[in-house]
Image (cartoon, rainbow, N blue to C red):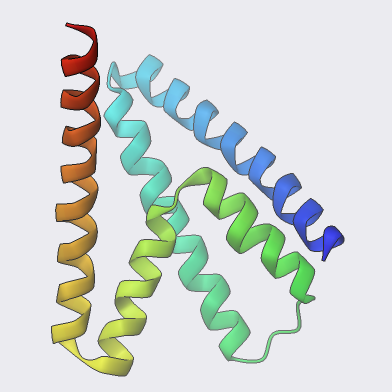
Length: 126
């Protein structure tokens, strides 16, 4: 178990560093930090989709390495990749209704939580 945690932590350090570098490059090149966010989200989705399909097709990869990549590296790079993958899995296994509910809940609750955090801090400090 501890070795799994270390694998995830190592992958997370790499993914977080990559996220920073991609965002920095996009901001420098395009003047837009949001372009970096889009880039890491798309890259993360591409990688998690490929990793998931390779695993389904029987490509041999140790479980700990999968954890390091999927949870650590891609989790540090972007959690959007997990969100995208889970939405597709819901659609394939349970249909568009549950997938739509999952996507809607994440967007509405996530953006709502951001607003709550912003307005909560503003209320405390202004």
